Image 1: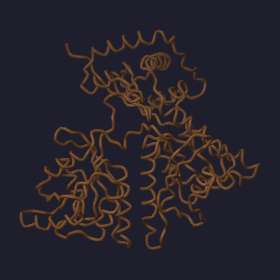
Image 2: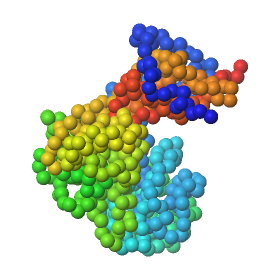
Image 3: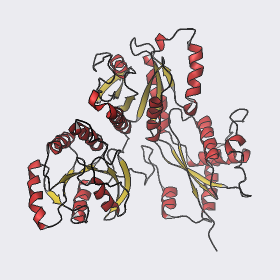
Image 4: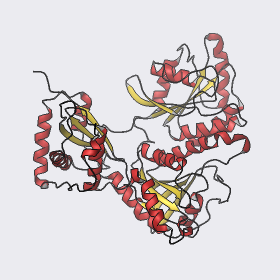
Length: 499
């Protein structure tokens, strides 16, 4: 069976020609009226009735607040997550360190929706567990609006707990202290000792049996804002740029060259940047926040986990930024680690610029061949602007700013609903979705649900196959631009009302 991609080749396709803009509103009204013949739920109506604010956000699309569950291994974090969710989602095992990644779950309490983050990621079979706990907690705290800090009341506060408390104090985020494993009144005396941590009242709970969890969540809801401050990427100040890439690719050197000063330690040893460094840099009169995230210094006894923790910090920087510059080494083929970092940016929905470093070291005769090799390697992200630079000499680094501006402009872009539906109408008329099982799904209406990144919702009478969605995405880029930003297209299948 042919895939939808084969029905819509890239070459020899005539561009979409949109009708006059004066017809857009009339078309939109007619299509909206036609939607009333179909079964729509409350979420559909909220989306269709949404209004755009000055920042380009659709009403009802505000990011949910984030509540992170943190604590050292084996204190019952995942058990608490399961208790809050009311189902067994997080992996629970009677040994520390089972949770390897931060995992986010949609949750609800007392009528409020929020995102619950379960954290883990440390290994107990190597030295330096305190530092590993701190790294994971640092990432979780940075990306959360409020934190539930879980401590084992039967053990009391440990040195690791004290280190996490220091991080919490520096971050200034609201904290709710959970004294876990308090199964009865006798354990409440143990919980009382945790006042010494200086985080306020310890809430005695038993995550295993559910005791006290309701009171804990009530306190967490009081600490949690209505809308995520972390997720609100609508800055009034300088745009935020994450400088990411694998170790020793030249991120710190590039930041120093852009800043015009030695602000970050540079060394031949891979991974000399241990902590993310935020720098306010002015380029041609325009200020940007740059975050240098080289990762974590490798130590012999921690080698197995180094890449994992570097990846955590990279992810945190990406999620806190608006656009990511992924720095690659022109002298080496694209690696799996490079591909993973690029995918992290796309999955996070951030604008993207690809920068190839060490281009000045490439032989003049070699460069045309290298260009073709790069085009093949990056065929899936041809929409991302690419610049060739030298972090050592500063060659072509001035080209980064126009690339950043293009990507951020596309990331912020909104297509009027009438214009979007005119585009979809012309596209479907020229290239209808292929028949599947004797049926042809019909696109009823399309709307842009949000920007940053641009997210489109299509109402249809049947399932729109992945190949056809990719075709729509490709044509959206050709018609409207969207250079340097991921595009999300979701489909809501709706049936006609029963009379």
